[in-house]
Every structure is written in structure tokens, then in C-alpha cells.
Length: 167
Image (cartoon, rainbow, N blue to C red; front, side, top):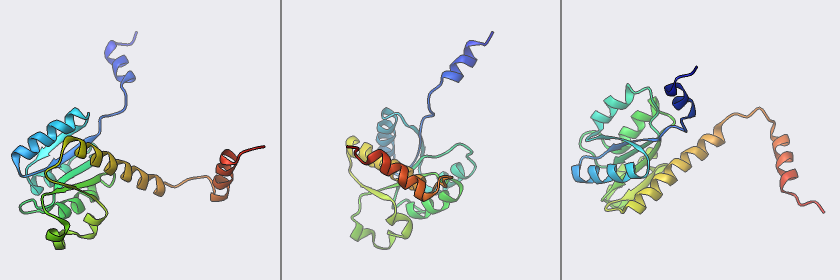
């Protein structure tokens, strides 16, 4: 007879998505982490880029989203994202900043241009929207690059047969 623990594990739903929040302003980190948890995410909070790097590089479990302040002391957000994407290529990236793009200037590296930016101060609704968009964008990119065993002409033909009205 199976134990109730075994049944609970077998019936468990999809895993909770993990957000690595890197924010040096404690009050902003506290509020943002609370909002993310209310949205159902597992949240790991780090106060700077070095702490985040140490935690993420050794982590075997996936990090689904990096939410990092652009102007972190020491290791800036875009540099951090570049480092972490080597060990967590599945990770989406969302930056936050109180600065305008013009004031950020050189911080708009190629890493940052492909990521989304959330301007401070933000609401819980803006946070939820940007997090969802960042994750959806990464999933779409991952889907585009996944190899398929079906040849392109068969895929196109199948698509046309399901979308062409029959009369």
C-alpha cells in the first residue's frame, strides 16, 4: 500500500516559479518580495550582485526570473545578468531602475536591450505585468529555438489544414 506522502508527491502540480530579486534598497526589496510572493512566486532576495552570483552559480534548481536593479553597488544589474545566464540560460531578465534610459546611458548594454525595464516607483500591478511579460517573452524565445523533428513543409501544411475554412 502506498503511503500518503507518496500520493501527495505524485499529485503535486507544476513547480512554483522562482524569482531572484536583487535590490540594494531594503524597503523596496521587502515590498517587492511580498508582492511577488502574493503572485505565487518563490522569491530569493539578495542585496547585491556578488551575493546573487554566489547563490545562483551553485544553485542546481532553476531560476526563472532575475529581477535586478540596474544600478546595484559593485556588480551592476546588466553585468550580473550576463554572468548568471551562463549557469541559468533558462532565466528571464527584468531590470528595475529609478533612472530614465537617457540617464542610464552606457548601462544599456546588449544584455539590457534584450531585457525589459521596470521603472521605479512601480505599483504591484505594474510589477505583475512586467514579470508576466518577461517570463512569456523568454518562453516564446525558448519555443522558437527548440528543435523539432517535424520538417517545416509538414508543419506549414498541418497549420494550413487546421486554419483553412472548408466549404
